[in-house]
Length: 252
Image (cartoon, rainbow, N blue to C red; front, side, top):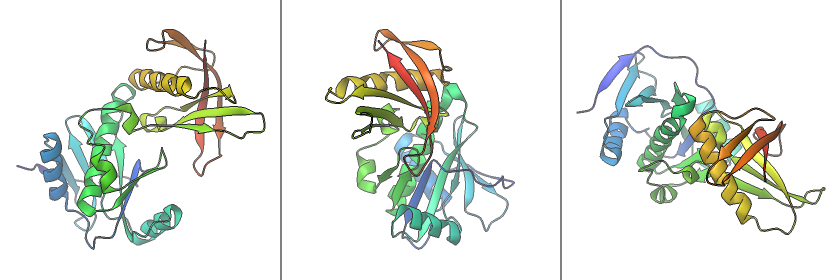
């Protein structure tokens, strides 16, 4: 049995974790999303509807984890996303977390991502992960069942070459989902990228478990590397359309 409650409408939506574009004439009904979620993940997904029957915005809660869902954005906003993301979908939905705390951020991110997956599959649309700049079609979600938390479902590690200083820039994209700054480091050209990618995976794993990033000058132990990692600098970067907040890290 699906639990559906009503509550007062909340504040304006924040920047979403996911935008889902679709061409279906009608958005998926909240009850359909709840039924899909319960079948996929055991549920129960509790839907809390606003008092305004004309809105498609609602809260979707599973256990202590809540997300704000809007399955049909206003036309002007959907058009803005269509222009920015260069897709053909005339309609758009969005999902973002509610009441996320640092130490529980993994479960909150997993909950939101599961809902984005469900809306994509129910509409046959395309999900855009804003933090990682990744597009996910229904076939892509089939390879990401999200049964449990896997960091690589939520994070990208980028390698940028051809810099003026001759170094290779490595950085993550996606830690902002967890309320953290992304991390970066630099290496000389010509070295294997694999050790850095493996180290970043271990470091990001520790940071998402900690739920907070150490300050500049502080160090923390990463057991997977069997060494200390030090934060040496904090900066912002606008190489992409979305500003990145970065912490440079070093390890011996």
